[in-house]
Image 1 (cartoon, rainbow, N blue to C red):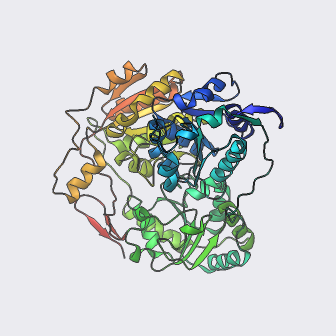
Image 2: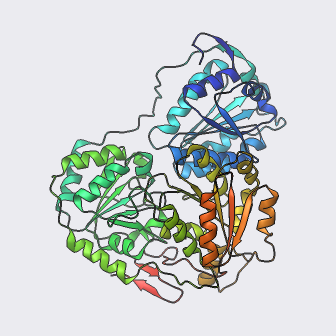
Length: 573
């Protein structure tokens, strides 16, 4: 690490700033606008550059790393198509509140706006999908800009920040000056919750007969899982989680309700409809949770804690807003409540009745294979302790239902954007950040093909990820909707005649591979894959072609109107 006062060029300043931000990995791909940067990087030994095979993969890897570790993920790509290829990954990180700093090369300053070779207005393009972005116009501003970018990405509600680096700026020199403190006008996120709001919340919790904790990814981002666990157990409050909140509370705890919403558990949605107090922490009442908003938790007094004030009253009007950090809020509630344990046995007994009425079930056939079995078997063999990444579709929802997440930062999945192709690069990013737990990817045959080129990255770096391909030769979730709501017109979703032989393809990438077609083969394949750590291991599970994810709330319907199977709607009361 150099001292302030030295003369350095822009590229040298960039890497010195990354050192001071404790960056371990950069996910990147070189190009013309970054030649000076990559020349400098050649001699950088203390920060590891991971060469991806597509810039979209870099963005998803950075997010996977960020979600698994809590540290910001770093992307470095060239101008024009290199920058625009990151747009999907940036949007994904923005919608799922993942901290990320994206550095994009840019043409020389005097050519900006002239339609120069490989020029794109990436600042303009990404303005709606970043917390903030910067175009560096003077090398003297570079260190301060990078400092601001990291601060913005990691403070308040996390998210992606982009820094655009013109070629001439990175070649220019100035005296390096590292800002010791940072102050950004207009950006002052509220961390400490208002004392009076906390007292009101504690009072409502103390007198509630049927309280319910509804928690999202904000609890995990705030490292507040322990405070959540203490509050739930101390007050006998059941906990339901969003897709991104799974693992915030141990899935094997009797108070865990699993996921709520469109493909949530019957008993979680029943609890939402019947609770008298709904305590939302780090969740944003998105449409996949609420269903028809007019009918959501109509009997409940609603408390909403979120660090982002724009999330409050955005979708659901609440009775008590509490802006602030989830960890601080939960601890303040714990301190304000009496230490005696509340007796809520009648409420918990009511929930157990719903759980027994409509449990999650599936049939097992010795001659065929169900996705639910595969996921539940992985959960059993990993004891709910793996880092699970998923792609998007039916397998994603089955994962939320049948994998018992016991720790935070254990599910990495595309929630807000629903990005097919997310899973493989996200698993790669997670594998660079996590070394004490297995990293397992569940992906469908559709999504796997979208970023299959990143398998080269996993093989080259010998990452011990377990790639479990759920192959039903269909775009399964789209097919499910076509069967239920579109007259069984399977329009361009049947892939059986166009899918490759995945085993041969994966082996050509240099990856260990095998196939399983029944439960016994699946058990053995899972065991072997979990034991193999000399690189990535791929297992193709040939599952039944036309399985369905239930329960399910149809789009626009109330969560009180759940489909339990193809022909059986369940109306809650």
